Amino acid sequence: MIEAINLTKKYGDFLAVDNISFSVKPGEILAFLGPNGAGKTTTIKIFTTLIAPTSGEVLLNGIDPVKDSDAARRSFGIIFQDQSLDDELSAFENMELHAVLYGVPKKLRSERIEQLLKFVELWDRRHEMVKNFSGGMKRRLEIARGLTHHPKILFLDEPTLGLDPQTRNHIWEYIEKMAREENMTVFFSTHYMEEAEKVANRIIIVDHGKIVGQGTPTELKIQTKTSSLEDAFLSLTGRTIREETVDGMDQMRQRRRMWKK
Image (cartoon, rainbow, N blue to C red; front, top):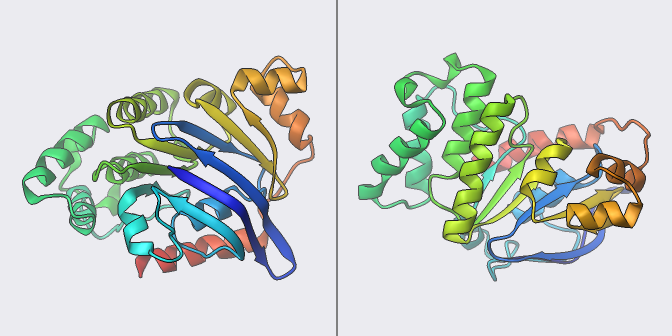
């Protein structure tokens, strides 16, 4: 369902993604982990048509997003790391606009919007302007919106950042249910190791743009002779504190501009 072949992305002299190859099967939930600046968000942006790779090939549901971005976009949903809601619209209007843009049949729109807003416990606030929502409420709305069109592939970039454990568990239970029942492929990044270990069927760990480890949580612990996924992660990526690069901040601003187009 997702395939990367010798994928590379350069920003000047900076090599953000360094010749990586992997595939993700239909219905699989894959965690894409790495320290800050490891290449996670850049890889997701390539998959979601926001930037083009410097070299290599990507296929989503058999579609090359570089050659046919519109068809590729219809295959996936995306929940960004940074907010992408329209603050001047209500929660319902944000959901409805997304449903229209993704071609959800009119007779299904209201039903799905109601179902998802109730799921994230925002139905009673559906007519309120999003600018009045708290950060957690906005995050829940973004997750509901990303599921509106029942995508074949769901990309999640730090999806539960800032949410309490109860809400995180509630959301992941729903996503896991959709993956099982609709054979939806889920590709997500997170810094919560317990989340990755609990939810993912398989994990890929990247550092400095390269894949440094992959396998199930148990396989990674065996490979690194560690007793926890966090220790396995540190064994593969080191213990040096990483900081978000200036390039990374510029790229996030570029993503917002490109997506609005």
